[in-house]
Image 1 (cartoon, rainbow, N blue to C red):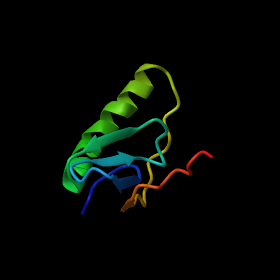
Image 2 (cartoon, rainbow, N blue to C red):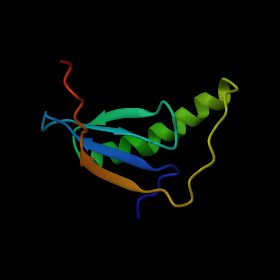
Image 3 (cartoon, one colour):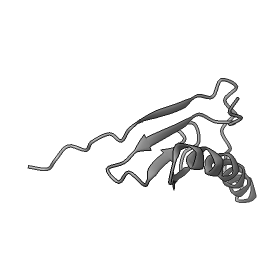
Amino acid sequence: MIDLKYSMVIEATDDPTFFAFYSPDLAGFTGIGHSIEDCLYKAKWGIEEHVALLKEQGLPVPKENPNSKVTIQNEERLAKAV
């Protein structure tokens, strides 16, 4: 079982050696990893640090998601400017 307190989205990028991740539940939390496993590892510890920083700065901390999910997808393409 993957023990994350917030949902995560992991996106494959054009560069096969990098994946991006973010939490839709935890504004401002993002990162990169070299594999899906690396993203999960970094997210687990990064979330704790991010939440601690929010608390330290007196900012609101979202409630933990009891049904957190991990979604793995290709990065969304941005529309090209014309």
